[in-house]
Amino acid sequence: MKVTCLLGSPREKGNSAVLAGKFCETAENLGASVRTFNLNNLNFRGCQGCMACKTKSDKCVIKDDLEAVLEAARETDVLVLASPIYMGDVTCTIRAFIERSYSYFVPDFFTNPNPSRLKPGKKLVFIQTQGQPNEKLFADIFPRTEPFLKRVGFPECHFIRACGVRKLGEVADREAEMKLAEETARKVLG
Image (cartoon, rainbow, N blue to C red):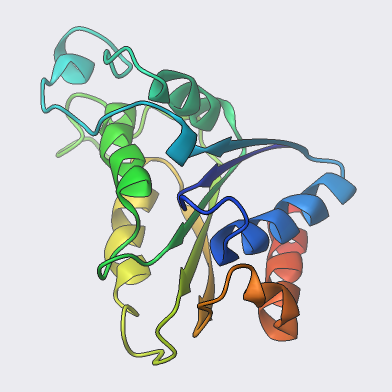
């Protein structure tokens, strides 16, 4: 099984990366091959609204560093999106990837009962960390994003969240969240 992990934090050892690392380590121990992209180290932009992926190509036509990431996500069995919350939402790098995944839709996706170009059976793990300890704040991010992710080609979505983690990597000392990352990997790959 292939796992592709997209790290959306500029902090390579940040809390979202730690949780993603635990998920990916468990996945590798279960026999999965894991490929990780640190999006902050790549040069790319969001969707340009050119519609070429609906009229001229079955892929995004923008030539930048996200091209390889989009292809890896297209070929993966499990996609992990890991992001801290910055200014009330996922980071701009994760947001840009989500925008560019618009290219996974078929041209008539509004009316087509099979709107995705991706092969069936894909799974997604959404990892969200936030310094804010109040669980009610930013609780809308995954529920707001999940319907799009399902429709674009990841019908099975899982959610891992850690609140009140401000210091670099402090989630590693949170037994419940680390256990959830491991259990989610076991469930997804099981």
